[in-house]
Image (cartoon, rainbow, N blue to C red; front, side, top):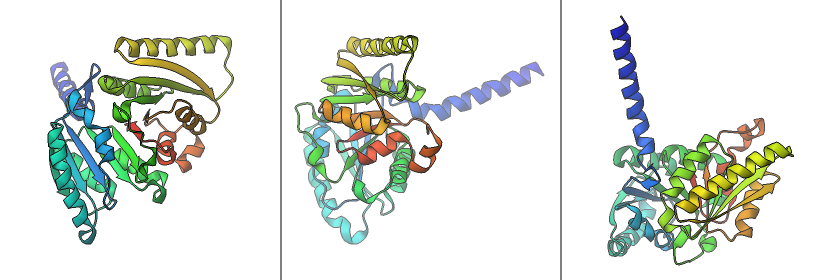
Length: 290
């Protein structure tokens, strides 16, 4: 009987390993492990700026990018021509490129591509003003991998020598999701010039709690410095979304990075997760790690 139970437990453990394997293969010990990038868009004639800002991904192990066109038949021709031109440019960067067509919703198309191609990094390029918080949440769920949210209006893209990862703002609440996000972020260390760690206070802290918080900030900064990333930490106080948006403006961030933390209040049930709301509202691109 004991042996039978042992085999059941061992079998269950193997199943758990298999289910978890997909979620962790992107980053392990601070190194990028995945190989495929998915670029999905439902806008007509997107510009190449987004991918140009991410050209450094080749240097950290990515080998292939999949262009996913989700437009209806009558509107997709122009995009397909663009994608063919982009393939040549990406070949010069050392990235293989393929084109897929899936005329459905952006989230469903990303889900289909994820299941078929085992993507490890997704880019959703769409018109954020015409979608709600639930749309962003659906995209995160569909990708099940770090997903970069980029607005159709690309005026907030800051052209720099290192692209989107030039000045990164990492918003943390010390949750397990934030720790996972930090591990993912360290996988991009070769692309990051400056990292600002931001924590938002929601209530007045005791002296003891403040000391513990400062210790966490110093330890997190030290971890990043040891990886060769120029890092500073900052404390803000107020509403999470407002303060993170303010911090991004204060430090001229080129990218906001957040974990998709659990809903924190009854109000969030109706308004959506703070990370998804920031991705919807922020002018700069936002990288969400599920």
